Length: 329
Image: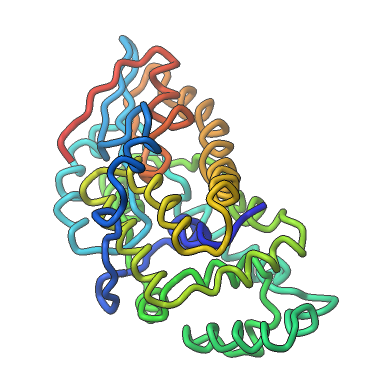
């Protein structure tokens, strides 16, 4: 089951560019966590740090770039430093290329059911009146009319509500995360790009949950705006200090404090979200990466959350016989 608090992490995967710091405050919550609990939760996690790595075999090189799907001016000098590395590659692999993004936009135009309830009951029909009133107000706070929210797939509305109201205008205005900057450089340098997965992968994963579970998530996702601001601020801060493993674990510990449920249940829901967003996708990516890398030098640019852990891309490359070296980011 996809659970509430971590919908914000899904948002970081779904939305290509969101400028968090332009209009939002938010506080990095990691300094307030119990250091012993954080250390225990981290355990002996492989590759918990570093946003740029070089993986080498005698006949192939894979540069792994941990990205963030958020726009931030601090990404400009990072992209400039990555340009020579991208220009020298034979191919760049991304979660979604311009081609896949166009295909997704086309699919959403042809099939409203990807995001909306096109038949049967709408959300007001499925919710108690007080719950619908809370939900519709949260949607209006984010500039989403209640009549539109009423017809949204619950997982989709949960994802939108995980974004703080202060950031919605920036989302609508657009922008480029590091992924898009990498793609722009590759196109300018004439380096071919390819996608790590089909364009609709995340939509299929997030929409596959039973409706009753999606409704449960939707109601539980109604966190105070400050909480969503703090979570995004924590995620962004952990990215720029290259501590993606710590940021992911910290999200679980923060969820224990925010959600009204036993810690053990929070841990279960966190693992379920990890499996959906990271583990299963990473496993599907590895054959794509290894095939593209054979006899070549490639760049793999994917969300930094995909790098760490026993299930991470870096560990997958190590298991495939690559020698890994962390590079300055």
